[in-house]
Image (cartoon, rainbow, N blue to C red):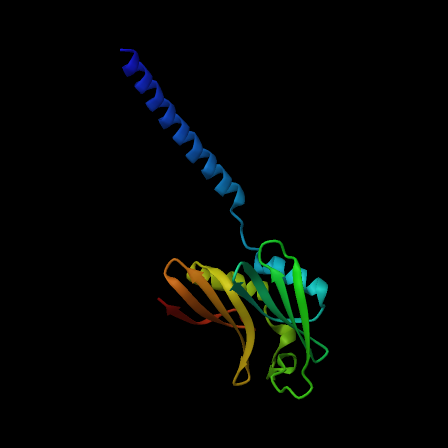
Length: 179
């Protein structure tokens, strides 16, 4: 009889102890779960570092680090900034003079479409996220046949998607799915 009570007590202790351990582990995972900085927050951080024209923001994963690579142009100089995707810590700022580079997006114009009358990158991000119900991974402003547009890559429940947006009107031009 004592043996049955002892075995029952030990069994109950193991079950409750296991449940407690699992609950504690779940709480630790919830505390350690990090979220990426939004592209709006990244934009604010990098423009404080280098005040110029934001060209692109790309989320990159390298070994044990997740970071944003951000391209900014200022006074015909291209800057590549690398910042921590969680904390916003600036890892490095690389400078590249573009004297002979003809891909200078700051001088793009087509009729009345110039960089001055285009939607912001934050607006393009919002439009793209609503169009495919996803999260932005990379965004860049590009010129195609004299036409300025945003090219936005997103992660969705369906896979990856690329959305092209007219930079002057905010109209979604194309959605391409990569299932």
